[in-house]
Structure formats: structure tokens, C-alpha cells
Image 1 (tube, one colour):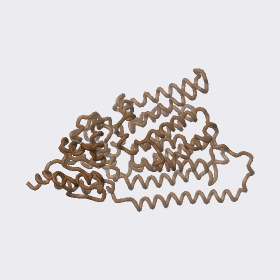
Image 2 (image 1 turned 135 degrees about the horizontal axis):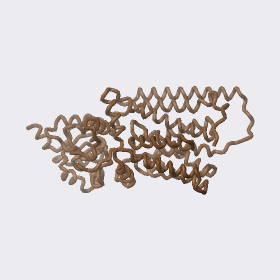
Image 3 (image 1 turned 90 degrees about the horizontal axis):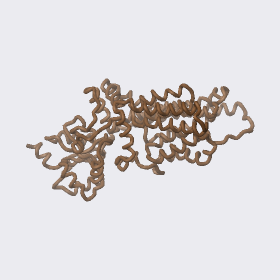
Image 4 (image 1 turned 30 degrees about the horizontal axis):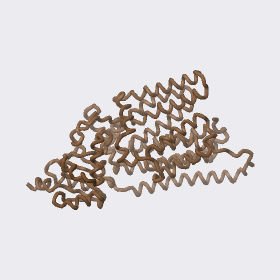
Length: 480
């Protein structure tokens, strides 16, 4: 798999993939910097980071703020991301982490271009790979730790394909990755695939096989270099059967209902189906493994694309023997395309920045303020969108479940689903847990159920996306 000749790395055509990378990064930077406050995840992550900086310790269990699951074990695997987020936000630089996430996606795209070139893929085709990866990430991108995990995975693929001393850089990379996000276990998994491919190719315990096996073992050991040790392994394994898969759309099975899958991953799947047999044994192993990963959850669509795009596009057969085109026409077309891509990046970034919603538009800030202002005693809150309840962290309120979601036991998830689905026992759960405030989506099914019980629940406020219902005694206490 040789790279492109030096003569093909010069001129406007050679710059086209990098122009695509720059345009996508500029667009995603505008998205990340302008939209983060509507993401409920950042609320609890900043709260976690503030707590780590204040107490110099990582919490390992849910506290009394989560009254229904107080004391439940918690493995906050994104602790480093949260700490950096809190530290920068406290210094008036809340834009730094979102910008880092956009730049991390630039690392993803740059690695895709380099891996395409190593396989002899043309500059135009490498640009297509960049755009497919961008489309695949549309639904999952944001100021999130998993985006930094994508950059670590892309860098891991690039380093392992070097097959030289630099491949050992995967080990320290995995240490950093494991402290950012639990997806770090993809590093030893990919290294195992490389070792298996080497063993099948060599059919002997050769130096190449020994080196690949040693690298896989070292990267597996690197995942233990976190404050959690083996507990991070237990956490990652538990996610495979976690009840969050039934309540969070990102964890649902991938299907044609996902725009990111249809636009970004499906073309790659079709290319593999048609031309995949032309790929090397190692590439076929990786493609099959990550196709399984792709269909296991919607959140894995960008993971599949960034790993498989160079493999799928390199498998397309070339047409040798075609007459050389006139020199001036294609060069002019290349310059025109390059300028058009750059302009698209500028226009998309500008429109995204201008049309971004007001801060907090994705959260029920108005209803939360109303509740805190009128409740005389700390309310016990249930949020139809559990991420909303992260608003009440460090506030005089307690909640049933919030955006941390991972540590909540299966029983809590079952009761949460019972309430939001309006099943037979929904009211008894609210009664048993002594919940006296409910934040619901405006004009939703749960609001209709609460509105029907006028004696038990009263609507006292609403905002653009939510309505607030409370039990009358909560307000009676306030009047007294």
C-alpha cells in the first residue's frame, strides 16, 4: 500500500482534501462553540469537574441529590474531560473545550486523508472520504468526551498501520484515552485484529507476529492506568447490557431512520459489499469487525466511518490505460473546486454562528427558575427528559434521575420508563417516591395525564419546551 507519488502531492488537487478538512472543522467549531449550553450533559460534567477540583477526589457513588438511587456505584470515566471543562469555564474560557472537540475532529479527518494516501487513493476520492465522515458524525458531534475518543481511535489506526517503531506510541495514547472516555477499549481490540491478521499472514510465530501480540497486550494494560483500575473494565462490559440502551436514542440499534447512517455510513457499507473482496486480509478483518460495531448502536456510526472510509474507498478499482487529460482544463477545474470548498466552509460556519439558538434554549430554564422560586422546601423532581434534572445539581432540589444516567440501577430505569410511557403504575411511582414536582414536555402525553389529575397536580409554569406541575402542598408550604 504505497502512497501517492510526490508529483501528485503538489497543486490544487492535492490541497483539495485538506480544504475539505479545514471547511468541516470550521463548521463543526461553530457548532461546538455556539451550541454547548443546550446540551444537558455539560451541566453535570462541569458540576463533576468543579467537585473534583474542590475536593481533590473523584466521587465513586451517587449522592443524596439523586434521592431514588443514593449510594449507587458510579464510575465517572469522563473525569478528565469534566475537570478541564470546569477549570476553563471557571476562568471565563468555556469556549476552549468545545473548540478542542472541533480540532479533535480535524485530527480524525486528517488521519483519514493520510490513510487514504497511504493506500494510493486519489485526492478527489480522499475528499469524498472526508465528507462521508463529516456526514456520519452529524448527529453525534458536540462538545463531548466521545469526540476526543474518536480522535484517539483515528490516531490509533494511523499509528498501527505504520508498522514501525512509531506504532508503540499507541500505548501512551491509550493511557490518555482511557482517562478521557471508556471507548479506550477499542485500542486493544484493534491491536488484536492487527495481531490476528499478522498471524494469518505469517502462519508462524514470526517477529512481526510477536511484535503485534506484544503491542496488543501493552495497549490492553494501558487501559488500567486510570484512577479506576479494573473497575473501568467492569463498567465498559456492563454497558453492553445496560438499560440505557432502551431509553437513549443514541444507544438504539442502527437503522435507515438515522440520517447520519444513510448519508455517511451506508455508502461505505455498499462499497465494501461490492468491492471489499479486493482489500487485504487485515482490512477485511477490520471492516467486518467495525460493521458489527456499526449496527450495534447509532452512536457508532462515526466510529465505523472514520475507521472504514479509507478501506472502502481504496477498494474501488482504478481504470488503467486512460488517455491523459489536457493539462490546463483539469487544473482550472481543480482550482475552481478548491475555492468552492473553501467558500462553502466559510458560508456554513457563518450561518451556523449567526443562526445559533439563544443560550439554554434546549433546557427548561424558565420552568426550573419558577420551581426554585416558589417551592418553600427542597422539591423532589421528576424530569420527563432525565437530562433536564442536571439543572438542579448544586441547587436546593433533589431529583429522581439526571443526565449522568450510567450509574442508575435497572430498577430506576424501569420506573422511569413506566412513568414517561404512562403505564398503569405511573402515578403510584410518583406517590411512593414522594415526588412533588414534574417537568414534562409541553403538550406531551405525560402532561395530559397530569392535567387530568387536577386535585393532585397543578401547573404553575412553562417555557418554550416544558411545563411544570407540582403538588399543591408544595405551594401551600410556600404561602405559609
